[in-house]
Amino acid sequence: MATIHPSVDFRSDTVTWPTDEMRAAMASADLGDDVYGEDPTVAALETLAAEMLSKEAGLFVSSGTQGNLIAALSHAQRGDEAILGEDAHTFCWEAGGIAVLGGITPRPLPTDPRGRLNLDQVRQAIRGDDPHWPCSRLILLENSSGGNHGAAIEPEYFEAIHTIAQAHGLRTHLDGARFFNATTAQGVAPTAITQAVDSVSICLSKGLCAPVGSVLVGSEAFIHQARRHRKLLGGGMRQAGVLAAAGLIALKTMTQRLQEDHDTAQQLAQGLATIRGIHIDPQAVETNLVFFDLTEATPVTPSALIQRLKIDHGLHIGGYYDRTLRAVTHYWIQPPQVERLVEAIRTVLTHPSSG
Image (cartoon, rainbow, N blue to C red):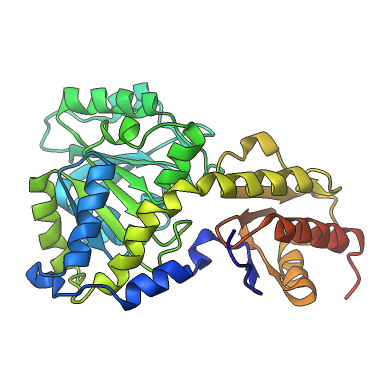
């Protein structure tokens, strides 16, 4: 069991810090200059990620956002169009990078409550050959779907998208920021999903506890082009094996324990469901993201609840939008801390004027 740190932070799984094993590996990592292709620890990480996801090659990048941007730049050219969900992270939370830096036009489509595109709408969105239109070139996907309660999307959906993409000569990229949460929740091998997409970006610094970094995987030719775009974006790192050493443990060890985070998320959801003034559907909690709403009758605003929890109870949760809040479980959150959060929220909502 993980050692419980005095800080109790449910805002995101990005707040995780390295385990003791990671710190030791980072301190003793074999190093070289990765821009010259000479860092053995980075090379080992890239090879492992590619093997786990059944791709030919990998590229260590600074973040999931950088990985997604590099993928788009490598699959498409200026004036091309990318089809994606209107709530996709690449569309909503990455500063418009594909358009600003890549000249790639996003074509957002509605998604269902689990973050899935409608297959017929995807087919209809693919443009014909007309000089007035941008060229449909890429479909950007996500799993788990962060904007949809962390829903874990099934392999069959990606197979269906892959069939459409192949029929029209399009490429597919998967934003897998919490990819292993999705495969854990679905109970499937990673390759059951990755075989249906051309490239994948997986994040090491969320629930997997590495301090920084993601890995982008795809074909040899794709990664060759991606390496050039990483350099263009200023992402060439030197003795990056210090970071990659933690990433190796993230992939080998931390991917195997994510069900524990899903269990604590379900514990939290079930506990919140007993509190008057909160609306939550525990069945919608599939991975480690817990979204809940304060009802209109609740005499505490979301911002006030966040502040009371922080100041009075030493607990951190995140606001999302309107009256929706989010709490995320991860390696450094254990069941007693979940119970502590549930009871603290119950106290604040029962005694709104206290403090």
